[in-house]
Length: 214
Image (cartoon, rainbow, N blue to C red; front, side, top):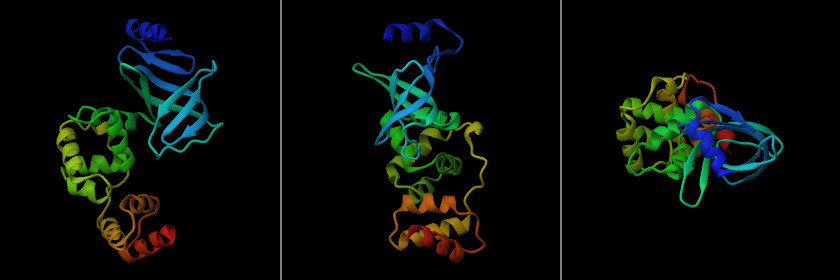
């Protein structure tokens, strides 16, 4: 199987669609589509049309159930003892994942963990503002890691991965600070606030968030 995949990867300049997978010269396996057979932690087993199952590491944000059809953009990591696939629902998240890999000391598992702790919008906002504190406050990412991300990506962020959703404002920030002060987990707070529509006051936003957190 390795020889077949490697041959397609190295000898074709155009992407090739085969057995629910897309290959190209630079990344080997770039996309996988099929049926979710099994989920375990942050991994999915995806069966392609030929019946071959591939294990793909994903963030905990990606929710998929056995029996569902899924299509993931992938990054393949070749190690001495294994071939590891990392999958994302959209190309923008894959682009960010690969940008994180350009940072010194950040490997695939670390990059995936960062994207588990902070969504793309939050990371891009923090990098654009060159504000590691913004990233640390709204996620469980450490100050040291946040500073590394800002330094490593500030000259690399492409406008194509900047989200179109509005930048979080003062009401959001104040509500976040209030809820964290009350003892709620920062990551849980951010996830709830992100699902709530805009509010005119901090108190109304906090009240709505408390209803969802309780």
